[in-house]
Image (cartoon, rainbow, N blue to C red):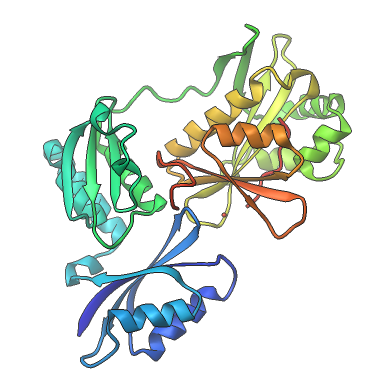
Length: 358
């Protein structure tokens, strides 16, 4: 039997995976492993298959998948040890690194099956053309060093970058824990407190919505929804739903809501926020967006996604300035912005919607 690792990008809609697996079956390939990952253009399906003697070769399998709708398909040889359960392998590597921290490059290479892994200083690679090459991944190690990985024939995905970052953070000395609340200084010198939403904030959140214009609420909810119901507030407070932050003004009133909400896509969360009109244009929206990026990365997310009216130039500029990539959707007048959390630009290579007013 010939063992192969196959990776292909597909359109993220129901039934596409079934079409790919049927195409592989018709070519005699037996699927032994499947992983769903996120990358710049959408969902990446990775298969480990074995093919009987005389069966389809790499070129034949690539052609079959591309005919079934797969794009940027790569087929490379695999080895039996690659069939080890991924979570088990990652945990074993983390345990090994606790005793051999100097072996971090080798462990990262094993985690991502890279051909090369080496230490480098951060300034030596920052801004280099090679840093964004699809077959090169730069993994930050603290503030001054990085590990440079290379893997021929199989570009790194955003999910793999997140896995590497998670392994590093699992074995390095822990940073100071993120505070449950923090103070943010706006451009005009006003100090704002940002903290998790609590159920007791219901009345203050309602008052903030009532102070917000119909247009701001429409930008956030795609309708002139007056304010979240008590049931919605309770849901926003549930960790299983995600994380919702409030921004408090000097007088204790709620000025903004910011959401990081779980979705079904692997490693992806929905980004959304609403800033009341009187506090727009003062840097509060940017501060909240930057904080959600930090918190998303700390939670092991790969990508944040949001949707907005195409007319909402302010929010589009904000998210684009943070590295987001704007794409059109099938709905007229609606765009989606994707922000990657693996250190690469969303447009270099790579899914629920957040409605925003900032």
